[in-house]
Length: 316
Image 1 (spheres, helix red, strand yellow):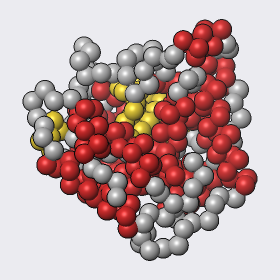
Image 2: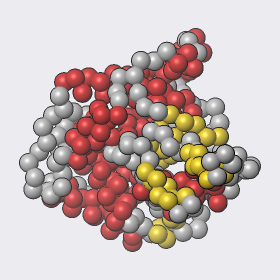
Image 3: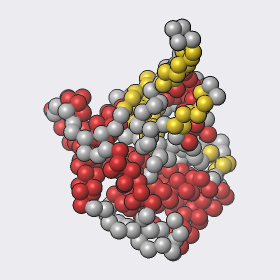
């Protein structure tokens, strides 16, 4: 979209209500994490994939299940383990003796929402099975290319890489995720409500979907129409340039990272009821877009580098 296009029209009331109801449901399941829930919906609306990294037991899988339960989409979960094979994800052709031919049996990737649980517990060969699916929304098997359902969303969880039995995701795989977020421990009030409340699995199981595939696709079209002016594009470009020459950064942000940041900022603006992007949208998302794409020198922390880059670029 050109920066000179007219601002988008606001969403129809019914669609806006359905979107807010979906967010409310996920917030009711994952207590005390409204920012993380908003980021999850940014990934959904921006046609991106979501990586959730944190310690076990903090709600990573719960967030994925809660999202799926309110979207009204087909859902599949794959538990990544050290012995998982690419064919366990993509599918396999099996020879049918009675028909004297091979028949393709699709794997769990042929769904709308794929939960790749503990993705970094599988070796790199298995992790890479998702590369084409995430980038092209298709898989190539036995010389044939098969399209995936639309919409298609991968929500992957991973444990910190310093835990035993984990394989760090390669840079090419990390770049396929629009956003990476962490949940952290809940505050005292949210934890008490969690301990005293209903089982999260029951809340998810009895959820009534408020969105569906046509509505999600309509929301994604609305995101594309959210206006980003020349000054906003200048700001994004300045952040990219700063990342490539910032002290402590070995590999800065690519043009594709800039496109991801802009797409996510448009979705963020739409979620907050605006038809134009402002610098605050970019700032709210910069860490989630940039941290897993930056490569630091030595022992520098990418979280600190991302924060410093953001602070080093003024808003004109």
